[in-house]
Structure formats: structure tokens, C-alpha cells
View 1 (cartoon, one colour):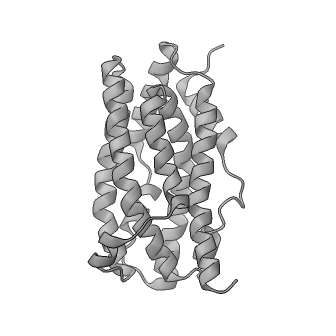
View 2 (cartoon, rainbow, N blue to C red):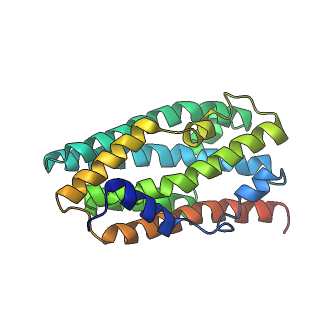
Length: 227
């Protein structure tokens, strides 16, 4: 029996869920031992990730529209719109981390942190939009948990304001509209035979590239502390 979109999203998210100890950075942010500079670097890297992902989502929306997949078009348009809001909320975080405008504009991003958006761009060019929608949605659950933990830690250990934590709060909050778009996109993909087993490969690689993002920042934090 063909699974429903809800069932497929649930099982895919479970299969692709990272191990509890997969993220080396979030625990040290949570306990207050990570350097504030590491959070500044995270924000600086996101300054490059966000516009790259937004262009990728717009391209996926365009490809979906050209193939008559209105549901995936709506999903990727919603993701792209969300990146605009994320960009707005990033500025207060950079300010709270004492990042100057000059540093923000001249910062050289790290390869390990930019592998994720590079792969999302590859998916935008090569992936079936419905498969990509499923793979990305499965990844959002862990990303949201990480953001929720960081937002709490910034308030508890650094006294950050709600505005300064707004970037992380955005992704930590429930997104019922986006969830509905994801369900519709996956269900339409199932109905049209456009969901294939390749979504699991996409999802695994998305998780691995995101893990590189966190590992790169954690390695830098450890090096700066002489560990």
C-alpha cells in the first residue's frame, strides 16, 4: 500500500534523524562553554547561506511551476520567503555578537560551512522538486531543535534580547503553513509518481553537509580555546 504524505514524511524524518551526539557545537553552546566569537562566526556563515538557499528555492519553485507541480511551487516559494525573514533577523544577532558592518562585508566563509548551501544548489539544478521537498523537510526537524537550544543558551548565558535571538527563534517556532505546503507537495508527488527512493540519498547528504557546518564551527571553537 502506498503511504500517505504524512506517513512518508514521518518515516523519512525518523530514518534520517541524526544521532543524539551528532552535533559537537550545540552542547557547548547549551552549557555556556562555547565562545561568543563562535556564535558570531555562525551568524557570519549564515549571512552567506541564506541568500544562496533563497536562490536555490526560487529556482526549485520555477522548475516545479514549469512541470505543472503547483504544490511544490508553493512549498519552495514559502521557503524562499522565509529566507527573507531570516535575513532580516540576522542583523540583530550580528550586532549582539559585536560584528561590525565592515567585518560582515569582508568575511571569508569557510568551505565546511558552505558545503550545505552548495549541495542545496546542486539539488536545485538536478533534483526532482518533490523528492527535494521531502528530503529538506526531514532535515528541518533537527535544525529546529538545534536553533531552539541555541536561543535558550544565548538568553541564559549571554543575556541576549529577544530581538538578538530572533534568527534562532524563527526556525525553532512551529511553522504550520510550511508544514501544510510540505504535506501537499509530497502528496502531489506521490499521486503523480514523482517521489522516488532517491529522496533518502538526498536527505542523507543534506544531513552530512549540515553536520560539516556544525563540525567546522566546533573545531574552530576548540582551536581558539587551545584544545
